[in-house]
Image (tube, rainbow, N blue to C red; front, side, top):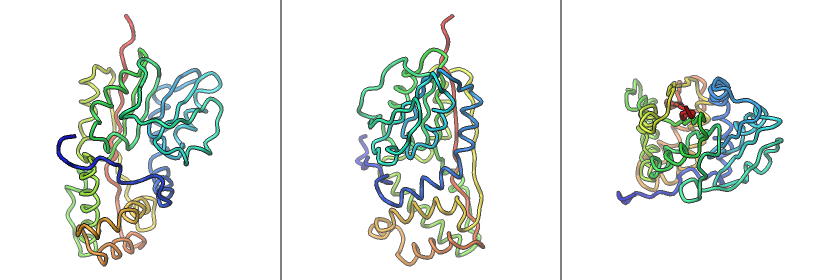
Length: 269
């Protein structure tokens, strides 16, 4: 990357608060993700790669879907949350998708959720993920987009406080190399790589303080709160007020837009 921005991942999965993020993400999105994968026909005998597997919930589902003759490779930079993931045909491996080798033509399915959006090298990595597919293989990419945050207008002082912290959090992500407008172009990016049957959906989950949508924001803001304050992106009082509102059942919250897109490679004629 040539912009001078940092490229290390902001939300370190080794942080104890990451467990709350994974839990909230699972509640919010796992059922929908599994629905997409099932609709693509994941079945016994498939070879699958779950990239940036986190705590392994999707990898475990895949392992069950491809059993007894299929296999699932679950990779991440930090395996401590994958170390307890046990399932027949499932292998957990440390892998850096930016720097480590990626085999060509190895998988029937490659899935990555909330990974590429953080990588300055996202286009090169997407090229590699597509090349790793077998003929007729599917790639499914899911990433957050901030268009809902950009379009929102604070209707109260409380909403303005939470919005300020949300925008400050986005600033930190972007300074580390994230592109929070990247996901809206995913279908076109898949088509540009020659994939067929490209389609996708977007999902926003609304809730109240204390809901999974709110807990996701709390986990993120708590983890990076000191940096937000140190850099002057929000005050400590604003951060505390936002976290309190996100725990208030009378306060409305929403997730970012999760865009899910998929496509498959051509089969030989």
